[in-house]
Length: 504
Picture 1 (cartoon, one colour):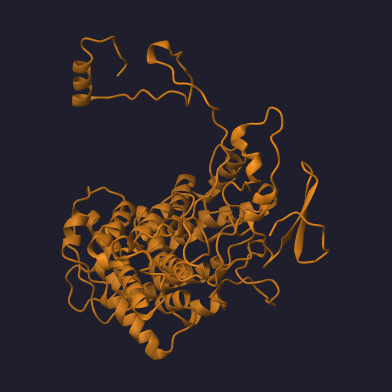
Picture 2 (tube, rainbow, N blue to C red):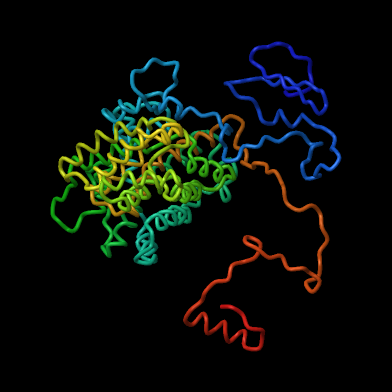
């Protein structure tokens, strides 16, 4: 692989000529990809003035900042055709953009399936029979109950703690209860053996994580309200149980509104997986060290917290609030072009036209607005959508609106802004687990993910005693001076009383 050779003319290969050495390398193309390790064979001698840290004699490295064109795993779960605004291969005929889970169009799943049934599909690869689904659903809902200590854990957070901080911490906290799920304690092949016992242990953690995700999220919600926590009920659906745990205030025979329950289930289904996005990749990167699945899911939750990922729902609504009325949209658009404002909810790292999920979100929004009334920001959002879609600036940059506008639905349902990322994280637990399980069971075992870097720092230099050093000044070169107040300032002043004056 990648060894110097004469070109064979084989069509499914890549011929590379290294002009530094004159050597020709032939690299096989499999599934329209080439192995990055093939470039390690392309070695050369150091050129005059070249940095030793470039490791020229050890072969070429492939630079791909942000993983724009790097495939790290073979997957059977989700496919995205971003250029076409689709999640389904172009070679299959279609009249409208589609998204697929294990090959099934997302429109069909949203219409006929449920979040938990789609969860089964994503994790195990096929739609379940009635009996298979009953077992899976029963196990997930049964494992929704948490240890009584979880209440004390969630209440230990400040009243104004962001719910994503609580949820992320709670996932990691869960791992402390289940020693049988920790490869550090049970052996490195705990989840990769693939035998009946190993799969049973793996499935139990999957039940626990999906089941407890709604419970922990509801606890993060109610701790902010100063309310007691609610034990997961019996007899309700996955999203029905979630709404019950958040909203039940002691009423007899309380059940969530069925339209809102269905809408939330559809949104959960749509958000269950989206290929190797930032959080799924974080789960796999963390999981590749063979850490327990609770820690891996917590890492994914932290990744999703960011405003470029799951936090985008919240960012969109805050942007719309800042715009205000529809008549303010033109001025906002111009400010975006001048890079004075940030446009949230437009553009997608993969989709270069409309996100196909947005079409389903619009239908769901109509159903919700029928009973809640239209959100006052809807007209502003639509005005922004229409203005951007007609503006050459956004057309050239392929900045089309994407699924992040579902925040309008969450707002209409009464969820607080900072809870939006939680509503993204809870269903995405399913996708994270599907990718984690696939990696654990992949042929050849798990390899730790350890990317390379291009070192551009200082070359070798000798240590200089502190009294002989020349100060290095300037932004990013020295630590910032922090303004202190109250007891902290008085304490620091006391510690500097016999020393030169310092700016505190």
